[in-house]
Length: 214
Image 1 (cartoon, rainbow, N blue to C red):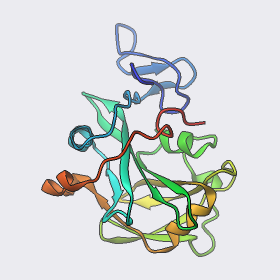
Image 2: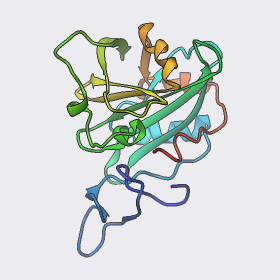
Image 3: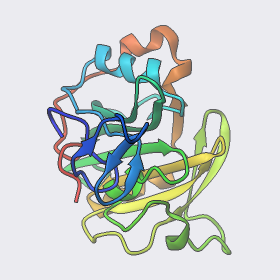
């Protein structure tokens, strides 16, 4: 993933558009939006993704006390723009130790959120039981947004998903106990609307969660 685009669904190699196909191709999943190589986090790298994104770039804003921005990834290319974005943050967990959060916005079928969630994708629908009250609520772009816990995720994390602005919104938190963060009516900002506030984002070291999802 570090050096060349990969499949957002499985991490496998992808073939660039060419004579026989006008889309990026994965040998397993067919046409995909390529996941671009992850680079160390910085205000500049975040700005590049924000500029290219066709979907929201969600981040808790303000960040919880002591939390830092620890990486960003996107699926898409120069022609399509970013059709899925993933923003990572980390800081003190609500029960001690370190917590991590990954927020993914994506179009239907891209599969990046499911990969980071550790479930079969591409979308969370089969894993959500939305006939009852939501398990968490966030304020996404100023709108109350219900999220439901995704069943079947690995035990080391908690995964929530819902719909914001007509697109999937995933929240993946490690360890599982850090799910307490989701019960505080977290405020999410779309960084495409942040303007000069991007320069104020506190930056930490790159999280391995973005590089080696299960």
